[in-house]
Image (cartoon, rainbow, N blue to C red; front, side, top):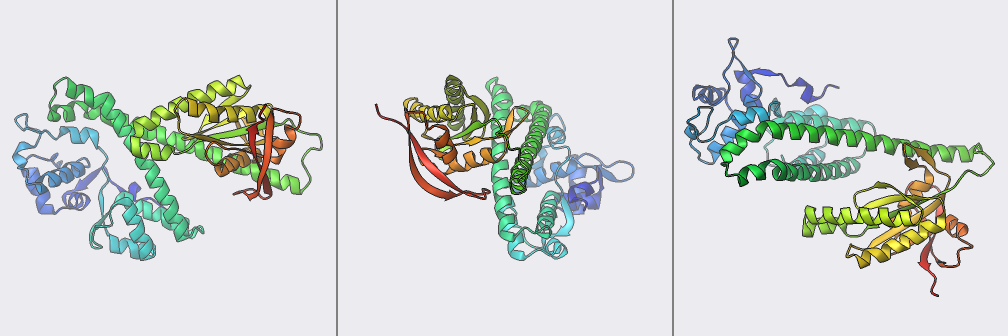
Length: 411
């Protein structure tokens, strides 16, 4: 299925431009006569950046701004050339209305309304025209529904993705403001000068951010698929009794997470949360090396660490919970499992990784929970103590897992 984004032409007739920008053909002619949009060529077609120009002009006009202060004339108080550099391929409105889209994709109205709420277009009337990127999102949701996803699952995944992407965009925006905008303002440049002189660089920053985000998304998606394949392959081989009889080398995997990281970001701001995350990363790296481990990767509010010995994984995790309190970090909790793992490109995959991650999710503040395999591997370690807590059913783990609370034995 072709995406609605694929239908966007580089140039538009006056009627197409009017629909794409959400205005009338007469208004396009008016703005053109005022010299506020890029002129049509000899065939009467307009460059695509005019969509952004017109939507911005309509926004200013709705605030009762006199359009005479706008334009590309050097005498205008606010030029518009920056728009063409900053938004050269804008989202456009389609000839299709929301009502027509709903009927075409045969989507339940409740689902459509919820998705529009997530996208911020719920207030648009059914007879209003649809943004091309919104239409593409609806088409993807319909495709996922046809593949077997329920409405509840679709809404949950879209909401989570939207929240995550908004956080990413906010971080990129703050970075650009700090690196590019603030120095210009500090040097005495006017807002109009800043808009014009930074437009090209802001566009390049945005393109770098978009490409970086897509690369990371593809990378982490591929890792997730590989992890799933390895896990399910392990189970299939175990059922077929095809795993090698000789014992494979074992690795202990520990996941340690910062409690309340999201709450910290909401109350103290992203910068404070980022500083806490940086301090957490340095602490995990330092303490894991001291215990013979290796920091494998950071996971937002947590970290994954690998150890050749299960006992050192336990000691490191307990040490981290103590050190976090001493250094003023939010409380840390952790989970540990041990067994054969698959190593690829410096990372680790397999059921041990999944179990350790799920066990960490069961741990309360300052707790380190471990599996029975970890307890068995530490039977000669007299400085460690383990108390059985529960038999847990963990997500994507076929067997019930016995969990133990680890602690340092009192001398």
